[in-house]
Image (cartoon, rainbow, N blue to C red; front, side):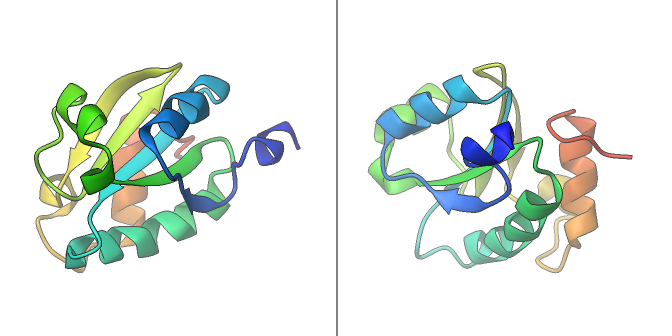
Length: 126
């Protein structure tokens, strides 16, 4: 219940960089998708993250428009879209950059992404 009250269990967009800092402060595990509206692969990522957000309530799943967050992209060295920033205890621990770790294909499975997030221990994966 506490997780759900903090926005876990759903995949949602945050409006600004300032919101990013607030969101990562209040949750132990956060996956943040840095996306661009015009990038097709971001829509593919969205589809998988929507499924995983419902399944892994222990982790908060967010998305942030990279074009509206230049400071964060610079600070986190985000150059490739889509990039997932994996944030644990308020610190960015790992990144999933593009689809390289997901088989380098557009039709990777949700399970492949789940496995990759499990490798980073950002979700409880068995």
